[in-house]
Each structure stands twice: as C-alpha cells, then as structure tokens.
Image (tube, rainbow, N blue to C red; front, side):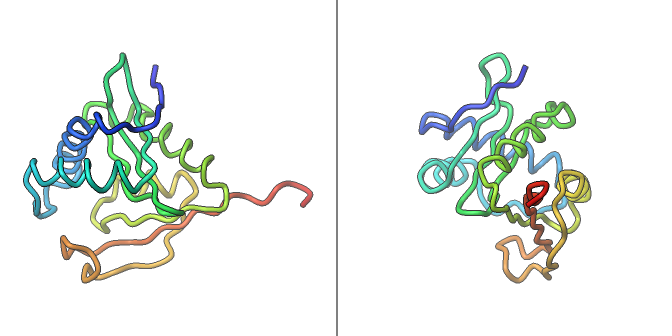
Length: 153
C-alpha cells in the first residue's frame, strides 16, 4: 500500500535518485544537463526548501514524489518499476486536493505517457512552447486543471 507524507531534508538524496532514474527511463531522448551531485544539491537547496514536497512510500521506502510551488506542479516523478501502479495518481490526487483553486504544470511535448496521464486526470492543454523557455531547449506543453464547480453553485 502506498503511504503519503511530507518531504523532509533527509529525503534529498533518495528523491534526487528517483528524479534521475525516472527521467532516464521515461525520457531517454532528453538531454542530461546535471550530474548526480548537482541534482542532489538542487533537491537539497531548492526543491525541499522552497517547494511543498509530498513523498510516496511503499514498505517504508520512497517510490515517488511531487513538488508544488504556488499553483504549479513543478515535479512529479515515480520510480520506473512503480510506474503504472497508481503511485503517480495518488500523488497527483493529493496535490489537486491541496490546490482546489487549480493547478498548472509543464511537460515535455514528446513525453506522451505523461501527457496522457495528466489529460486523464482532467488537465487541459493551454499552451505549447518551442523549448526556448526551458533549460533542456526541448518543446514543451503547459497544462491547467481547474476544480469542478460545486453542484448547484
């Protein structure tokens, strides 16, 4: 069973590893711009400090995480062997519940699996970019989710 908990400073190394493994498995075509030490430093000094991080665990071991800043889902990564097991959906549902006013995200245009995942969760494509605004210089898409209006309201 998957349990969710807030991210902690001591999660930095394992979350950086999940980040790297997940990106490599899901997007082998994506340029690798940062080595493992840089990724750990970014996780330690940026993500876990400035973003709300939610960690998914199975049997006491982190298997995925989501990171939110404001109304932007900045990161959602799952261990490759846990993809398709509901971990990502559990994280996304928790993030949506915590941001009932709505949520935006960026996804690389070629990441079809992620695009289908977000579209199935109610996100709508609102913009497409040519890559000039991300450090990978890879075309991307912006999606937005708005919570449904209350019935009778």
